[in-house]
Amino acid sequence: MQPLRLLILPLLFFAGLLVAQKGSREPYERIIRTFVHLPINDSAALPKIRVLIALAKKEKNAAELTKAYHDALHYTPSENLKLRYADSAITAAHLSCQEDLIATAHLGKGIVYYFNFKRYRNALQEYLIAMGYAEKTKDHYLIHKIGYHLGVVKSYLGDHCNAIRHFETGAAYFLAEMQKNPHPNLLHNMRKGYYNSIRQMVICHQHLNQDEKADSLISIGEKGVPEHRDFKLLRSYFHQFRGISEFRKGNYEHSIEELDKALPEIERNRDFAWASVIYFYLGKNRLQLGQREKAMPLFKKVDSVYLRQHFMFPELCENYKILVQDARHRKLMNEALYYSDVHRKLENQISADVIYLSSVLDAEGFKYEKQRLTESKRMITVWSVLGMTMLALFFLRYYYLQKETEKRFRVMVAPSGFSDGTSGSGTQRRAGKFTLPQEVYDKMREKLQHFEDMEYYLEADLTEKTVADRLWTNTQYLSAYINISKGVNFRTYLNELRIRYIARQLSENPEFLKYSNDGLASKCGIGSRSNFSRQFSKIYGMPPQRYIKKCIQANREREEGR
Image 1 (cartoon, rainbow, N blue to C red):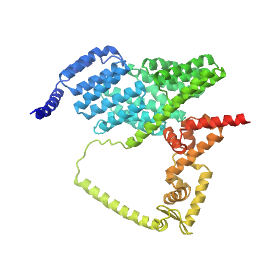
Image 2 (image 1 turned 180 degrees about the vertical axis):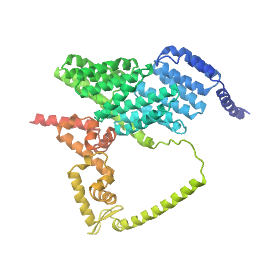
Image 3 (image 1 turned 90 degrees about the vertical axis):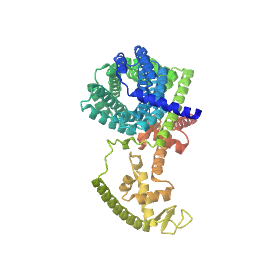
Image 4 (image 1 turned 90 degrees about the horizontal axis):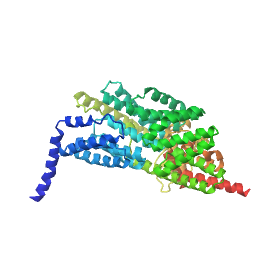
C-alpha cells in the first residue's frame, strides 16, 4: 500500500492545483492594484507581494505563484534577491505545467543575469531554455521578446549584422501589433518591445560605423518614446546614443550635454555597464576639449566600476590604454603596470566569453531567422492533397533532370579510382573524391591566383557562388580546384586568406595595431568579432590581442636594435 500511496499523493497535489487555478482571479487583482502604480525596484511593493505569494501558496495556485514571484523580482532593489525570486518563479512555473509561464520564468532569470550581473553565459543558457518552451506555444510576443535578448548576446559577441536581423524582425512585429489599437496594457508592452529593439539597432549600427542609420534610429527614439515614467530609462539611453553620435561628429559640448542628461536615470537603475560607457565618453570629450584634469578621473571611474562589478563592454578596453599612457606620461610606472595588468585580464575575460558563447550558440544551431510562427493548424483538404501531389511530381521531375546533369558533370569530374589521393595522369589532377582535367586545373590556378593577388577575398559576404561568378567559372570547378590544390574546403580557404592577411598587416603595418577586433574583422571581410577571434585562434593558436602584443614587442626590439 505504501508505494501506491506515494503515487497517489502527487496526483492529488496536481489535481488540487488544477482546481485552484480555475478559481477567481479577483482576490489577486485586488492585491495587485495596490502596488502596480509603483516604479520598478520600489521595495514598498514587497509587503503586498508577500501577501500575494501567501495567498497563491494557500490556494496551491502555481500559475499565480509564478506571477507573484515575478512581481517580487521586478520590485525588489536587491540584485541577489532578484535572483532568488527568479529561481522561485521557475520552480512554481514548472509546477503549473504551463509552457508560456515556464518560458517567461526562465527569461526573467536570464534578464537578471544580463541586466543586473552582466553574466552573459548564464543569461544565454536561460534564454535558450526559455525559447525551447516558448516555441511550443502560440505566444508570438514572448517568442519575439526572447529573440530580442538572444540578439543582445550576439551584439555583445560582435556579430552585429546577425543581431540587427533579430531586432529588425522584432521591431516589425511590435510595430504591427501597436497599430492594431490593442488594450492599453498590451500597447504599453509593444511600445517597450519596439523602442528597445530600435535602441539595440542603434548600438549595432554605431559599432559598425554606420552613423547615418544610427542617427536616423536615434531620431525615431527621441520623437517616439512616451513620457511615461516606465520609459524614463529608455529615454536616457537615447540621450546617451545622441551624446556618442555628437562626439563622433566633433560636437564635444553638445555631446557632454546629452550624456549628462542620460547619466542620472541610468545610475538610478544601477545599470553600471552603460554608466561606464557614459563616463568613458565624458572623459574623451574632456580630452578633446583640452581638459585633461577633468578627463582622467572619469577614466579612473570606469576602472573602479570594473573592479567592483568584474564586467566591461569590449569597446571600453581603450579606457585602459588611455590610463596606461597617462601613467607613463607622468612617469608613474607602478600605476602604468597596474592598468596594463587589468587591461590584460579584461581582454582574457572577453576572449573567454566570446569563445564560450559562440560555441553554445553554434551547438544549439539556433536560427531565429527561420522561426516557426505558425498561426494555426489547418485541416488538410482534398485540394491541399492534390496540390502536394502536383508538387511531388514537379520535384521528381526536377530531381531526375538534376541527376542527368550530375552524370554529365561526372564525365569531367569523376571519383578517383587511384589509391593515391593526389597523383594522376598527365591530363588529370586528383585529390580524394575530386578530379579535374589538367586544362581546367591550369585555368583555375591562374584565375584563383589573380583573385588572391588582387585581394578580392577581403570583400564581405563572399560566397562560393559569388566568387565562381567573378572568376567566370562554376562552383563545382571552384570547389574541386580548392580541394585538390589547397586540401581544404572553400570556407576554410577563404578564412585562412583573410586571417593571414590580417596577421601580415599586424606584423608590417603599425596602423593595424591600433584596431580593435571589430575593426580587424571588418578590414578582412569577416562579419563578426567572435568569428574573427575564433578563426584567428584556430590558425595561430592564440587570440588576436596576444598576437598584437607580440608584434608590438617585436617592433620595440627592432627599434632598440637600431
